[in-house]
Image (tube, rainbow, N blue to C red):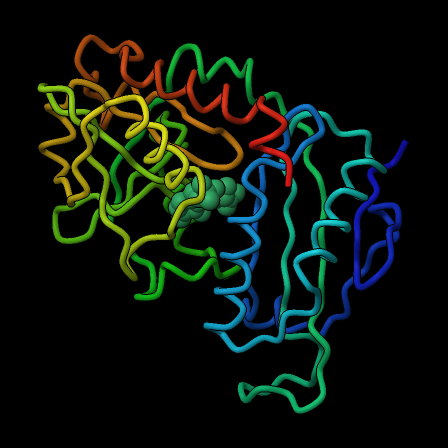
Length: 287
Ligand code: PDD
C-alpha cells in the first residue's frame, strides 16, 4: 500500500502529491514546519507542537490555515490512514504559490503538506548503544527559535557529522554549544546536574526538551539552565539529546572522545525511561 500524504485539503497517495513549481517553499524556503512523535498510534505532546507552529507562523507572518482542532483531526486522520503505530508526523506550511518575487504575494494561499514516517523509536539500537556527535560551527541565521524550513546549514552540519562517522552534529557558537542539527543538546556534570542552554533566539524551543525539564524536576534531578562549552562537554559525566523523533538519545562520544566510559549513563537512562512512561500514558500523551 502506498503511503497516504496530505496536501492542501486532500489525502492522496504520495506519488500523486505534487506541489507547483512556483511554491515559495521550493523557491525561497519560505515556510515553517513541525514534527511530532507517534507512539502506539498516539501523538506525543501535540498541543505544545501546535502552539509552537502557531508561534512560528505568526513570527514569519504566514496565516495559520487551520484551527488547533482542525490540525489535530488531520493528524489523527493521517495516522489512521497509514495505520502508523510508531514514528513521526511531519507537516509544513509555506507562504504559497506566486510568481517569484521577494515581497509577500497579495493573494497566495498557504501550501500545507503533511506526511508520516514509520520508525522504531522505543527499541531503536541507537537508544541502547548511544550515538557519536561531532561539533561544527553554527552557521545558521539569528532566529533559530522559528522552526523554518530553510535548513541548509543543518543539512551541511549533519552531512559533515556523517562523514566524520557520527550521527549528529552539535552546533557551536562562540565556543558554546547551541543545540544539535535537529535536536536539543544536554550534558550531565560530574556532580549529577543536567545542563541545557536557556531558551532564546539562539535555539529552537524543543518540545521534548520542555517535557524532559518537567520530568527531571519531578524526578528530583538537579538542573542548570545555562550555556556550556565544548570543553565542558568533553569533561561531562554524561551527554544526551532530545527530539520528537528520538525522544531521549544517549551521546557516548563527542569529537571522537568517549563521554566518561563511553556508555550511556544512568541519568540519561532514567530520563529516557521517564519520558517513555510519559509518552506511553494515554491520559497524558493523547491530545
Ligand atoms: N527537529 N533543535 C533543532 C534545530 C531541531 O530541528 C529540533 C527538532 C529540535 C528538537 O525539538 P523537538 O523536541 O520539538 O523535536 C531542536 C526535528 C525532529 C526534525 O527536524 O526532524
